[in-house]
Length: 256
Image 1: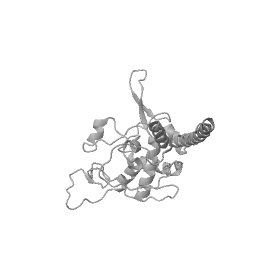
Image 2: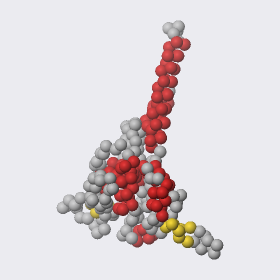
Image 3: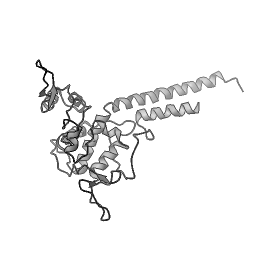
């Protein structure tokens, strides 16, 4: 019975995002920065303004190397974009379609229903353009790495000069948030890399936080729904527990 109660509580904690719920496995001997994310905690929620800014950072800084193959343009409606804006964003890309009447594949402007195309035709081309390293797809990266958002944020702001005692191989860079401290990705964000229409800060820390917020939404777009259901379930089970206890006291009142 105790094991059942413990398993139930842990499941509910995971559902609402309470501290102690399991996260993605992995990690290394690194110190990660902690950020005050709006989506953390039981009543966490996404900040649409931050997610839109993060999407802009992705487009202008990250999209040249990293794909998001599991995200369709129409999903951007969750960020607050209207139908016309989504169509305009999609039309900036071309996707392969076909075959046509002659059996040939052809390129056409992307539509909202299409997924965001990869910057590379295949993995071999991606490696050839990145000194042999394969840039990971970012669709689920915030859930695929241990400590998700904190790890991504720490990685983006973690580039430093290597200690004098450490030799950095050609094509590698020192990062204090990456396991082993040697990473093949050059520093992507320096600050003032993009210009926000809303006048928000464009420091390296602010840009990194915004794109991390966007990537967290991309990896778990139903987080807010999950937490609402979790809170409702905890409330219902709490009432049920009280009623069950009172019923037990009444039924066994004459037993001594």
